[in-house]
Amino acid sequence: MNDKSMASGTSAAARCAARADHRGVSRIDPVSATAYIAEMALHDILILPDKRLRQVSGPVKKIDGGLRKLVEDMFETMYDAPGIGLAAIQIGTPKRLITMDLAKKEEPRNPQVFINPEIVWSSQEKAIYEEGCLLPVDSGIF
Image 1: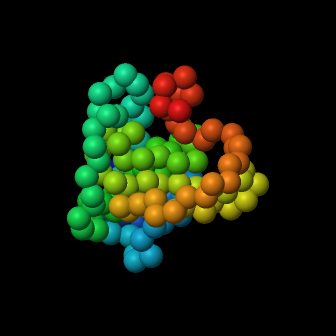
Image 2 (image 1 turned 120 degrees about the horizontal axis):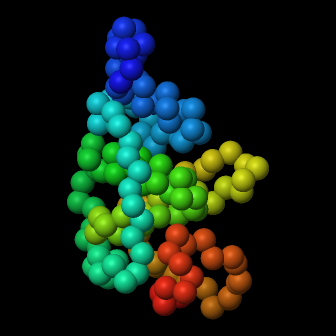
């Protein structure tokens, strides 16, 4: 915190919201800024052979301030990488949670959050796209 923000009485939550707006990060929580988002954090992205990537992710059981902060942190980490998607397990958190933004560079950001996602149908049709994973392509996962 700098002297200017202390003198003005600006709350940590308001500073964080302003920082997120400045970086173009959309808020996932439409309510006003609160203490749980006081500081977003960049996380290290795990790479193979880190054994934590092989953990089975458990379901998210409740949406609370801790989960909201995790999602905000994941978006900040994903955008900083830069990437278009990030799973919680990639930052060492074994939860069934994914952040994604498929907007093109010239388009406004379109952050999406998937909580406890399930594949319920898949097409027999095949399509070829550029890989967007933050793990190295030669990691053996693909």
